[in-house]
Image (cartoon, rainbow over all chains, first blue to last red; front, side):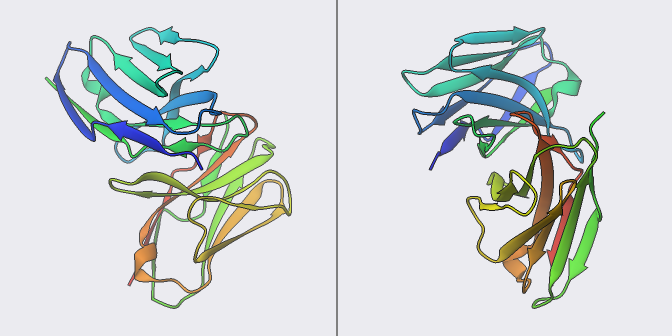
Length: 111
Length: 110
């Protein structure tokens, strides 16, 4: 089955700086890669996703890049703000609605 | 707005008890999922269902079973609870690739 590795497990950045979280996947048939954000005490919510026919996708301060050859994808957050503090999960799917999640990254924004 | 409701926010049970975790969604979604969340292990899929009365094993189904008698309700059953099943349990539903999660049930097995 699919295996998704996520790094780093914790990340602290100064407010206003950029944050990058990286994930690798094992199944070359995977074609859908979402990112979920879980604020403290709340449920995970989808923040951005990318499909395998696209190399990069942006939504305001967040962007996701995908390298199919290397089987890795990354989340980039620019101009970080205190409300970006959360746990972020990457995931991969072969398109059958079943997601395999990474182990999560706890991002802390230092004021 | 999609609503996924889990019946209990916190639950404390004894070893060997049969435990039922209930999940209801109000958006007529075909797909429903049960995940377990543990620190450092992320979200691991226990069971999922694409339709009423059907179920498929996820990555960690041992010690669990599920029931989906109605489209809106998906139940997770711990036949004989054990201490290693102490965890946060998250239910989710989808009608495509986007998952909508419930607020979770923190289960403690003593």
